Image (cartoon, rainbow, N blue to C red; front, top):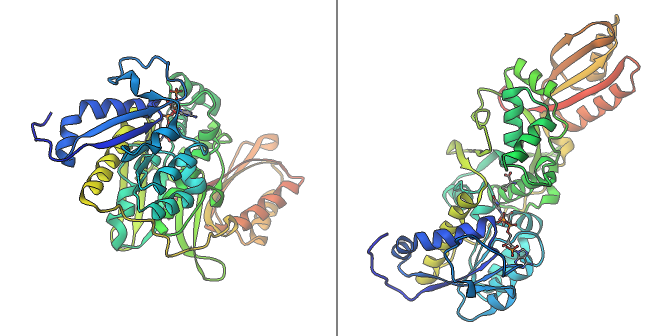
Amino acid sequence: MSSEPTRGKPVRLALLGCGTVGAEVVRLLHEQAGDLTARIGAPLELVGIAVRRPGRQRGDLPVDRALFTTDALGLIKRDDVDVVIEVVGGIEPARTWIVEALRAGKSVITANKALLAEDGGTLHDAAADGGADLYYEASVAGAIPLLRPLRESLHGDRITRVTGIVNGTTNYILSSMDTTGAGFTEALEEATELGYAEADPTADVEGFDAAAKAAILASLAFHSRVTAADVFREGMTGVTAGDVASAKEMGCTIKLLCLAERGPDSRGAESVSVRVHPAMIPRSHPLASVGDAFNAVFVEAEAAGQLMFYGRGAGGTPTASAVLGDVVAAARNRLAGTRAPSESVYAHLPIRPIGEAVTRYHISLDVADRQGVLATVAGVFAKHEVSIATVRQSGREADATLVIVTHGAPDSHLAATVAELEQLDIVRSIASVLRVEGGA
Ligand code: NDP
Ligand code: HSE
């Protein structure tokens, strides 16, 4: 604790939500009160906490129980509330609360990636209307300072690409499959037992959580409004132990990636492509060594070159660290009579369809091991202008498998290739189609 004297009148906080993240916000506010006061130049005072069940036991949380209420809107509207922290989640009523607070000129800190990705524009518009600050560092990659670098530090540069592992649950599962050779179901069970995966892991394993984060990152990186609906999304439930083994043979590992990149569309117009899907990446890629439930984001910018951000992307305490950083910034702004940088969407870049995204592919086919089969399969790739880089056959006769890796090709060309291969008698099944990212 610092002995720095208090210099200003308190900055008053309303907390909406006191679950995994909110409880840790309360704890850190209490434990670090002295230092926070010294850094801000005024004390922070928690004046109310809105929850669903005010009578619920909350362990040894260092807080006066009289602060709990179910009336979130009433709390937000109080004249003595300066800053509102929203850690409830979901679209409604969170959107209504945040808009109400911002329009009333109160600073808002939120970790709500789902809402920001679905309707961030409404929140930013309300912040502009109310002349208020909207901070959301915790919404992407938990504790990792990532949005402030994109929103401020890199504003003198031109970002070309953002590639990230932004979901801890799926990274734990894929890392475990890579290390132990386990299948998806077994690795998911382990992640659930260890508390990484939620009881309903759909948002994580189907890529919804990563897609929301991808939309937020793309909006900031490319100065354009990108929503979750603009993000191409493919989950990782189809990744098999065979895919992981095949990736290993190629010197690769499989990660659920979020990729946002700017570049020309098919007519040469500048555009943005945003996608979330499992992909093979070379083991030499900086993201390949990101294991366990960690997150990492690799940013490429014209002047800065390559930057890597790494750390804990989830969990109450790490996420509360990001929330508290935003609280300090918002409190300082209020005391100085200044504001956070407003939304920057001047570029208005359109979204490039997934069909135009150029990637390399790894395709595994179960085929009949007969003369001419390879030539027929290769002919289908050539017809759709997908160039083959390598072909490997394993097994014989009824058990033959062809593993084909292509050079870069538009997604629509690959889709047409796969559709035609599926119609061939000699192809018994297409075991997997995986994108290959990073490296030459
Ligand atoms: P929890 O489910 O643990 O907590 C939610 C809190 O909101 C609870 O305190 C609950 O009250 C309260 N609440 C729910 N509905 C209402 C309502 N209608 N009115 C008032 N209070 C309500 O969520 P998390 O703490 O895990 O997540 C909060 C936010 O942070 C979400 O947006 C999430 O996406 C984001 N986030 C979470 C991370 C994490 O690791 N958990 C990481 C990064 C972001 P009660 O306690 O009474 O049930
Ligand atoms: N379910 C998310 C994850 C929490 O696994 O990363 C953080 O957003």
